[in-house]
Image (tube, rainbow, N blue to C red):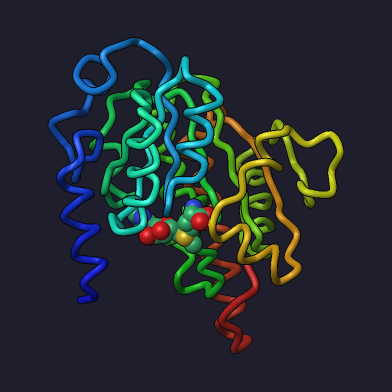
Length: 245
Ligand SMILES: C[S@@+](CC[C@H](N)C(=O)[O-])C[C@H]1O[C@@H](n2cnc3c(N)ncnc32)[C@H](O)[C@@H]1O
Protein backbone atom coordinates (compact mmCIF):
# COMPACT_ATOMS: atom_id res chain seq x y z
CA UNK A 1 0.00 0.00 0.00
CA UNK A 2 1.25 3.47 -0.84
CA UNK A 3 3.12 5.18 2.00
CA UNK A 4 0.91 8.28 1.81
CA UNK A 5 -2.26 6.19 2.17
CA UNK A 6 -0.88 4.48 5.29
CA UNK A 7 0.10 7.85 6.77
CA UNK A 8 -3.41 9.19 6.15
CA UNK A 9 -5.07 6.11 7.68
CA UNK A 10 -2.96 6.57 10.82
CA UNK A 11 -3.58 10.31 11.08
CA UNK A 12 -7.30 9.92 10.43
CA UNK A 13 -7.59 7.35 13.25
CA UNK A 14 -5.64 9.57 15.64
CA UNK A 15 -7.86 12.65 15.19
CA UNK A 16 -10.34 13.36 18.01
CA UNK A 17 -13.16 14.15 15.56
CA UNK A 18 -13.06 10.93 13.52
CA UNK A 19 -14.73 7.59 14.19
CA UNK A 20 -14.61 4.06 12.84
CA UNK A 21 -18.00 2.25 12.79
CA UNK A 22 -18.90 3.87 16.18
CA UNK A 23 -21.95 1.74 17.06
CA UNK A 24 -21.60 2.87 20.69
CA UNK A 25 -22.55 6.45 19.64
CA UNK A 26 -26.02 5.49 18.41
CA UNK A 27 -28.42 7.90 20.16
CA UNK A 28 -25.50 9.74 21.81
CA UNK A 29 -24.14 12.01 19.09
CA UNK A 30 -25.54 15.19 20.67
CA UNK A 31 -24.50 14.42 24.23
CA UNK A 32 -21.15 12.72 23.68
CA UNK A 33 -19.75 14.15 20.46
CA UNK A 34 -21.13 17.64 19.80
CA UNK A 35 -22.15 18.46 23.39
CA UNK A 36 -25.12 20.52 22.19
CA UNK A 37 -28.61 19.88 20.83
CA UNK A 38 -28.08 21.46 17.42
CA UNK A 39 -29.43 19.70 14.31
CA UNK A 40 -27.28 16.93 12.82
CA UNK A 41 -26.61 16.85 9.07
CA UNK A 42 -24.97 13.89 7.30
CA UNK A 43 -23.02 13.84 4.03
CA UNK A 44 -23.16 10.25 2.75
CA UNK A 45 -20.32 9.06 0.50
CA UNK A 46 -18.59 12.31 1.41
CA UNK A 47 -15.20 11.48 -0.17
CA UNK A 48 -12.97 14.42 0.75
CA UNK A 49 -15.84 16.05 2.65
CA UNK A 50 -16.10 19.31 0.73
CA UNK A 51 -19.80 19.74 1.56
CA UNK A 52 -19.35 18.68 5.18
CA UNK A 53 -16.66 21.31 5.83
CA UNK A 54 -18.22 24.10 3.72
CA UNK A 55 -21.69 23.65 5.22
CA UNK A 56 -20.21 23.52 8.73
CA UNK A 57 -18.58 26.88 8.05
CA UNK A 58 -21.80 28.38 6.65
CA UNK A 59 -24.06 26.94 9.38
CA UNK A 60 -22.16 26.99 12.70
CA UNK A 61 -25.49 26.38 14.49
CA UNK A 62 -25.68 22.88 12.97
CA UNK A 63 -23.52 19.76 13.41
CA UNK A 64 -22.10 17.91 10.39
CA UNK A 65 -20.92 14.33 9.97
CA UNK A 66 -19.16 13.16 6.80
CA UNK A 67 -19.61 9.42 6.18
CA UNK A 68 -17.57 7.26 3.82
CA UNK A 69 -15.83 3.90 3.83
CA UNK A 70 -12.52 5.39 2.66
CA UNK A 71 -10.69 7.16 5.45
CA UNK A 72 -7.77 8.26 3.26
CA UNK A 73 -10.27 10.43 1.34
CA UNK A 74 -12.01 11.74 4.47
CA UNK A 75 -8.57 12.62 5.87
CA UNK A 76 -8.63 15.67 3.55
CA UNK A 77 -11.84 17.04 5.11
CA UNK A 78 -10.89 15.99 8.63
CA UNK A 79 -7.55 17.82 8.36
CA UNK A 80 -9.22 20.95 6.98
CA UNK A 81 -11.81 20.95 9.78
CA UNK A 82 -8.98 20.65 12.31
CA UNK A 83 -7.00 23.49 10.75
CA UNK A 84 -10.13 25.67 10.83
CA UNK A 85 -10.79 24.76 14.50
CA UNK A 86 -14.28 23.56 13.64
CA UNK A 87 -16.14 22.03 16.58
CA UNK A 88 -19.29 21.22 14.58
CA UNK A 89 -17.70 18.72 12.17
CA UNK A 90 -16.69 15.11 12.42
CA UNK A 91 -16.08 12.22 10.05
CA UNK A 92 -17.12 8.61 10.38
CA UNK A 93 -15.86 5.58 8.50
CA UNK A 94 -18.84 3.30 7.89
CA UNK A 95 -20.67 1.32 5.24
CA UNK A 96 -23.96 2.84 4.17
CA UNK A 97 -26.02 -0.28 4.75
CA UNK A 98 -25.02 -0.01 8.43
CA UNK A 99 -26.19 3.61 8.76
CA UNK A 100 -29.37 2.87 10.73
CA UNK A 101 -27.26 0.99 13.31
CA UNK A 102 -25.25 4.16 13.92
CA UNK A 103 -28.07 6.64 14.64
CA UNK A 104 -31.28 6.50 16.66
CA UNK A 105 -34.68 7.16 15.09
CA UNK A 106 -35.00 10.89 14.46
CA UNK A 107 -31.41 11.67 15.49
CA UNK A 108 -30.60 13.14 12.05
CA UNK A 109 -32.15 16.33 10.61
CA UNK A 110 -30.87 16.33 7.04
CA UNK A 111 -28.90 14.22 4.56
CA UNK A 112 -26.66 15.17 1.64
CA UNK A 113 -25.72 12.60 -1.00
CA UNK A 114 -23.06 14.07 -3.24
CA UNK A 115 -21.98 12.43 -6.51
CA UNK A 116 -22.40 8.81 -5.47
CA UNK A 117 -21.14 6.09 -7.81
CA UNK A 118 -24.02 5.77 -10.33
CA UNK A 119 -23.92 1.95 -10.66
CA UNK A 120 -25.63 2.19 -14.06
CA UNK A 121 -25.54 -1.56 -14.69
CA UNK A 122 -28.89 -2.97 -13.60
CA UNK A 123 -27.27 -5.89 -11.80
CA UNK A 124 -25.56 -3.34 -9.49
CA UNK A 125 -28.65 -1.16 -8.98
CA UNK A 126 -29.01 -2.17 -5.34
CA UNK A 127 -25.76 -0.30 -4.61
CA UNK A 128 -27.18 3.05 -5.80
CA UNK A 129 -27.33 5.27 -2.72
CA UNK A 130 -30.79 6.52 -3.74
CA UNK A 131 -32.19 2.98 -4.10
CA UNK A 132 -35.21 2.19 -1.88
CA UNK A 133 -32.95 -0.26 -0.06
CA UNK A 134 -31.07 2.77 1.32
CA UNK A 135 -34.03 5.18 1.47
CA UNK A 136 -35.71 2.81 3.94
CA UNK A 137 -32.64 3.10 6.19
CA UNK A 138 -32.43 6.89 5.83
CA UNK A 139 -36.08 7.18 6.84
CA UNK A 140 -35.33 5.31 10.07
CA UNK A 141 -32.85 7.93 11.25
CA UNK A 142 -34.31 11.11 9.73
CA UNK A 143 -36.65 13.42 11.64
CA UNK A 144 -40.09 13.93 10.01
CA UNK A 145 -39.81 16.49 7.19
CA UNK A 146 -36.02 15.94 7.13
CA UNK A 147 -34.53 16.75 3.75
CA UNK A 148 -32.56 14.42 1.52
CA UNK A 149 -30.40 16.55 -0.82
CA UNK A 150 -29.00 14.73 -3.82
CA UNK A 151 -26.48 16.15 -6.28
CA UNK A 152 -25.14 14.21 -9.26
CA UNK A 153 -23.61 14.48 -12.73
CA UNK A 154 -25.17 11.16 -13.79
CA UNK A 155 -28.19 11.40 -16.12
CA UNK A 156 -28.92 7.72 -15.49
CA UNK A 157 -28.85 7.92 -11.70
CA UNK A 158 -30.86 11.13 -11.70
CA UNK A 159 -33.51 9.60 -13.98
CA UNK A 160 -33.61 6.45 -11.84
CA UNK A 161 -34.08 8.53 -8.69
CA UNK A 162 -36.87 10.64 -10.19
CA UNK A 163 -38.60 7.59 -11.57
CA UNK A 164 -38.38 5.91 -8.19
CA UNK A 165 -39.72 8.98 -6.35
CA UNK A 166 -42.68 9.08 -8.75
CA UNK A 167 -43.43 5.40 -8.03
CA UNK A 168 -43.26 6.15 -4.31
CA UNK A 169 -45.63 9.14 -4.74
CA UNK A 170 -42.96 11.46 -3.37
CA UNK A 171 -43.02 14.90 -4.94
CA UNK A 172 -39.54 16.46 -4.81
CA UNK A 173 -39.26 19.88 -3.17
CA UNK A 174 -36.63 20.92 -5.72
CA UNK A 175 -35.64 19.50 -9.11
CA UNK A 176 -32.84 21.16 -11.07
CA UNK A 177 -31.33 19.71 -14.25
CA UNK A 178 -28.48 22.20 -14.51
CA UNK A 179 -27.56 23.79 -11.20
CA UNK A 180 -24.67 25.90 -12.50
CA UNK A 181 -26.80 27.46 -15.26
CA UNK A 182 -29.73 28.21 -12.96
CA UNK A 183 -29.77 31.81 -11.68
CA UNK A 184 -32.29 30.77 -8.96
CA UNK A 185 -30.15 27.92 -7.58
CA UNK A 186 -29.21 28.24 -3.90
CA UNK A 187 -25.76 29.84 -3.60
CA UNK A 188 -24.24 26.88 -1.68
CA UNK A 189 -25.20 24.56 -4.52
CA UNK A 190 -23.09 26.58 -6.91
CA UNK A 191 -20.33 27.71 -4.60
CA UNK A 192 -19.39 24.34 -3.11
CA UNK A 193 -17.98 21.92 -5.66
CA UNK A 194 -16.78 18.48 -4.68
CA UNK A 195 -13.78 16.72 -6.16
CA UNK A 196 -16.00 14.60 -8.44
CA UNK A 197 -18.18 17.58 -9.34
CA UNK A 198 -15.13 19.43 -10.68
CA UNK A 199 -14.02 16.31 -12.49
CA UNK A 200 -17.36 15.82 -14.25
CA UNK A 201 -17.88 19.52 -14.96
CA UNK A 202 -14.50 19.42 -16.68
CA UNK A 203 -15.97 16.75 -18.97
CA UNK A 204 -18.93 19.02 -19.80
CA UNK A 205 -21.49 17.20 -17.64
CA UNK A 206 -24.47 19.13 -16.28
CA UNK A 207 -24.88 18.99 -12.53
CA UNK A 208 -28.31 17.96 -11.35
CA UNK A 209 -29.91 18.41 -7.92
CA UNK A 210 -33.04 17.28 -6.16
CA UNK A 211 -34.37 17.62 -2.61
CA UNK A 212 -37.11 15.47 -1.13
CA UNK A 213 -38.43 14.14 2.16
CA UNK A 214 -39.18 10.54 3.03
CA UNK A 215 -42.38 11.20 4.97
CA UNK A 216 -44.48 9.54 2.25
CA UNK A 217 -42.25 6.45 2.02
CA UNK A 218 -43.94 3.27 3.22
CA UNK A 219 -42.81 -0.36 3.17
CA UNK A 220 -45.67 -1.15 0.77
CA UNK A 221 -44.66 1.54 -1.73
CA UNK A 222 -40.98 0.56 -1.54
CA UNK A 223 -41.88 -3.10 -2.11
CA UNK A 224 -44.15 -2.16 -5.05
CA UNK A 225 -41.32 -0.14 -6.60
CA UNK A 226 -38.89 -3.03 -6.17
CA UNK A 227 -41.39 -5.44 -7.83
CA UNK A 228 -41.80 -3.03 -10.76
CA UNK A 229 -38.02 -2.63 -11.00
CA UNK A 230 -37.50 -6.41 -11.05
CA UNK A 231 -40.02 -6.79 -13.91
CA UNK A 232 -38.30 -4.04 -15.92
CA UNK A 233 -34.92 -5.58 -15.19
CA UNK A 234 -36.10 -8.98 -16.45
CA UNK A 235 -37.31 -7.38 -19.70
CA UNK A 236 -33.94 -5.74 -20.25
CA UNK A 237 -32.03 -8.93 -19.42
CA UNK A 238 -34.20 -10.85 -21.91
CA UNK A 239 -33.44 -8.17 -24.50
CA UNK A 240 -29.73 -8.70 -23.82
CA UNK A 241 -29.22 -5.29 -22.21
CA UNK A 242 -27.27 -4.58 -19.04
CA UNK A 243 -28.35 -0.94 -18.51
CA UNK A 244 -31.54 1.07 -18.99
CA UNK A 245 -33.29 1.63 -15.65
C1 LIG B 1 -17.79 9.00 -6.56
S1 LIG B 1 -17.24 9.23 -4.93
C2 LIG B 1 -17.90 10.83 -4.51
C3 LIG B 1 -17.15 11.46 -3.36
C4 LIG B 1 -17.59 12.90 -3.02
N1 LIG B 1 -18.95 12.95 -2.56
C5 LIG B 1 -17.39 13.81 -4.21
O1 LIG B 1 -18.39 14.25 -4.78
O2 LIG B 1 -16.23 14.08 -4.55
C6 LIG B 1 -18.32 8.15 -4.03
C7 LIG B 1 -17.89 7.94 -2.57
O3 LIG B 1 -18.85 7.14 -1.92
C8 LIG B 1 -18.20 6.17 -1.12
N2 LIG B 1 -19.10 5.01 -1.03
C9 LIG B 1 -19.70 4.39 -2.08
N3 LIG B 1 -20.49 3.40 -1.63
C10 LIG B 1 -20.38 3.41 -0.28
C11 LIG B 1 -20.97 2.62 0.75
N4 LIG B 1 -21.82 1.63 0.47
N5 LIG B 1 -20.64 2.88 2.02
C12 LIG B 1 -19.78 3.90 2.31
N6 LIG B 1 -19.19 4.69 1.38
C13 LIG B 1 -19.51 4.45 0.11
C14 LIG B 1 -16.89 5.88 -1.83
O4 LIG B 1 -15.89 5.42 -0.95
C15 LIG B 1 -16.55 7.25 -2.45
O5 LIG B 1 -15.69 8.02 -1.63
